[in-house]
Image (cartoon, rainbow, N blue to C red; front, side, top):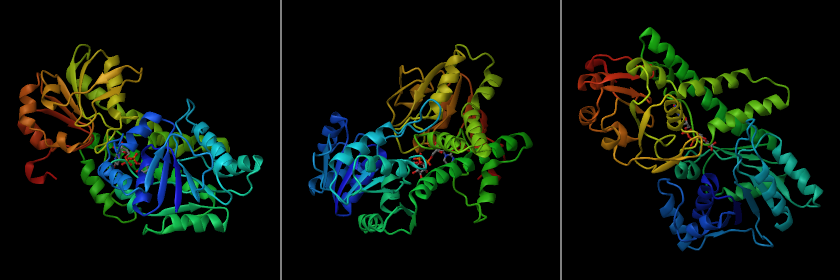
Length: 435
Ligand code: UGA
């Protein structure tokens, strides 16, 4: 099939590369001409395992092309909108880009083309897009919604072998086109209305975020009653009705999706006079959780002014160089406000910006980052951090304070090395009992 994808962020780029690998002719469009040139030369602008080699393979095979503009007459059977939907200041999703792209496609697509949203868009957006196209006189186009469930870090695997496909449609033609587009993908499909498809995406992310905030609150109670949250999660997860995934306690969820989508769903509910109390609490718990180390560091070090604190891990999770809504940046902000001196280490991220927009440099040598530090905080559970030579880390630090914000270090071992150690709801236990 001839496929047009607008937007080459995580979702658009990965989707384009994967559809090309299924044998479709794919044109990916992005307004950023510099990025387009980079992609045309086979360079991937994001860090994602396996993506650059598959991108180059598909470029060489001639199935994948990049352009800075939608061609004047786009003879594509299907066009996917994968542009960003950032959070506005009030938490609502900003759809400016989505509507601008749809308008352009409305001028350029051939009759019977299917125009589908891949970006996460508020419930009702598909209907609004259709009304806009009808107002433009395009009653011959078909609007659909086919949300994406890929995770950064495992994006290729999630797209090539998804757990499910969701086709939100208003007519049979759209369903046939979307089925043909996904012919190479083996996964159960949910055929539903556009509004239902849009809600499936938000409800999925909101539920996963709820699991995380739930286990983080359990962790905070565990810390007070001398229980171990990691074992609680294992015990809970053995019940198939609960499931063990997304029960890792830590410094909360970050990234470009959960924070934005939870806030947006609270607003979607508010717009129809529904007070989504549970999700509001999930968002609040997450906000508090991200700065949880602050109290412990103050207990250990007193006034943090002038104290040197090493932040280990800057990406919002391992396997990506994405720092959007990363716990590390939020923690850095509050520590800076207290006057602390910070050094940051990450195996992949080299540079990021603070909340105020000023650039922060990130060291690529963890042993340099902890040199003469008064305390260190593990924020991202990269294997490069988990597998550090911890006795050497201890030697290099001025004081022995270590906070494990992702519960990835064995408490007993760390204490044996000589650290004064804290984590998110796991107690120290004898080596024999340690899991
Ligand atoms: C998430 C969803 O998992 C994808 O299904 C969805 O397609 C994507 O958002 C999206 O809407 O585009 P992603 O943001 O890449 O994917 O990352 P996740 O692996 O879901 O992790 C999100 C955050 O939750 C990370 O900060 C991670 O550290 C945190 N997390 C995850 C926990 O704190 N505990 C857990 O048990 C799991």
